[in-house]
Each structure stands twice: as C-alpha cells, then as structure tokens.
Length: 389
Image (cartoon, rainbow, N blue to C red; front, top):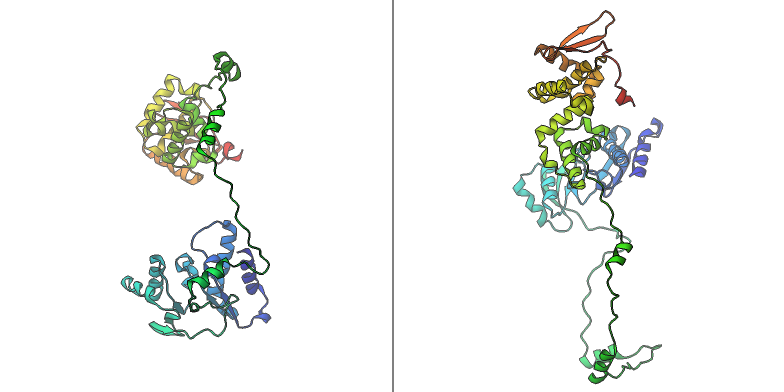
C-alpha cells in the first residue's frame, strides 16, 4: 500500500511538462482503497486511500484516467467508487455486494438478485460511454490467456477391461522390482496373557504428609485490596479522568473481579461520587473530616457536571489554597477545554452555588456561600500542573 501511494503520488507531483494522457488500471482495488481498517497500519491505509481518491477525483486535469477493478465491491471505499463515471457490474453472489452494485447503478433492491444469474462475460453497464440507463451487455471472448492458461475439461479415455486395469495398476515400472510384503506371524493368545502377567505396574511411593509440606510449603495469600485501592489503580491511567463515568465503572468492575473483590457493592451512583472526589483531588485525610461530609452532601444534590468542580473548589477553599485555574477545572469536569470550564463557572454562579470575585491583579477568588468557605487568589489562566507533568 505504501508503494502504491508513492507511485500514484509521484504521478501527481511531476512537473506540468510531463503531463500526458495516461490510463492507470488498478486491479484488486479493494486492497489499495479499503472501506474499513484491516490488518495494515493506519498510516499506510490512509496514504493509499488518499492516493486512490486523488487518482479518481483530481486525475482528469493531469490527463490520468483511472480504471479500478474489484471482485468485492462492498470492501471498496465509497469515495473512490463514487468518482467513477462508467460501471460494468458482473456476476456476484454475496448480498452486500449485490446491494452495493444495485445502489451504484441506481437500481431497486429487488432487482439486485439479477447479478447472480449473469453468465460469464455478461455485465450490467451504466455510464456516458456505455448507456444512460442500466443495460445488459456481453463482452467478447478474450484474445490472450493468463500465465496459467484457461483450463478446460477433457473427455475420459475409453474404459479398459477390468483385467487390463488391474495389470496396469499392479505391474511394476521399468526401474521398480516387485517386493513381497513380509508380515510377522501373529502371537498366540497364551503368549499375550503370559506377557501381561509378567509385567508389573510401578508401585507409587508411600505418601507422607510431612514430606509433602516440606516439598511444597504453604504460601500466604496476599491481602485483597480495598475498593478504594482498586479505584486508585484504575485512575492511574491519565485518560481515565476524561472518559465517560460508565466506561470507567466497567473497568473498575473488571479489576475487582481480577482481585476477587465484590465491586457490585458500589453502585453506579456511589461510583460517580467517588469519581467526583478523585477528580477534585481530595486526599483520604480530608475526605474523613466532618466538614468534608457536608460538602459531599451538598454536591450529591447537584448535577453530575457540577459535582467534581464543586468539590475541587471546596477542597481549595477548605485547605486555604489558591483558586484552581480554568485548565484544572476543565480536567475535573473531564474535559481539556478551559473555555468550557469558564462557562460552567458562570452557570454555577447564576444558580447561586458560588460567588466569583476578581482582585486588582486579575486573580480570581471563589466563595462557596453554602459552606462559608473562600479560596485564596489564583491565576485563572495558569496551566494544569498535572497535565503538564
């Protein structure tokens, strides 16, 4: 695919003095312009697909006329197939290929069955060079054969007499001597029973519990992690804070099953609160204080988008630290857009959840009236230190 992209790209990159009318025929086009990603790398697929699209879209002004041939029309990218002007649809059997062929020819779905009945060399043609309406046509016989030729069945030779056939099969060749098959004489039943009686199965060694314990000492099982430990392990992925809560919850349940912990004891609603606390950056020591229980109870009655942001502001006000920046608030909301964080703060202020003040130096101070807490002045345009790290 990389070689095809480089070759087609070179046809477009040459100087204008080398533009000549050229017919570019691409066989098995679904390999170079696939409709979906396959086993190849995404980079090679995009390069090849872009080169094929350029050939069919922009090739006319450079004198390049593209012809694409494929046996799997459903696997061919629509952007490439739609740029063709003339179509020849031959016999095909899969329903998706017949449906795709009918769509390209402007035929009804019930007429797609006719593609199964086409004989060899018969096609349905459409295009300005062929017909303005779908028209059955027949292509003449080919004048050249492939490297393997065109195999045809030959009649069987006249049957010979059974005796002659047996002699033909059993007669040795010129350099082959007839060898007699020597078989050993079968043993008698008495000899077989004597052999079985003489053979004794190996006796297993005596079992000793002390030796087994000494050979295989009992290993102490490590203690099972708590639900908070599993949640912290899930949140070690930096992208987990920006994913949907339901997706992170499924990852949390999978980790719990791996450690043998009952993750279903934490339902989705409780997990949302834990996620909001984690996004706010609240440590375990602060989360156990009575003041924080009040802040957590207030956030529970708020919409999901508000909870993590409210808890982050409450943590900053509780610890008497600088007001979080727009980038930090966006991360708590699960976004990377500081503009969205600024819009969320304005909406929270309109609902009376917070009060925003700006000092003489342009620093922001946020007060939480329901808790009576207030943050220190902070730069709203500062970068998120965790994101930069």
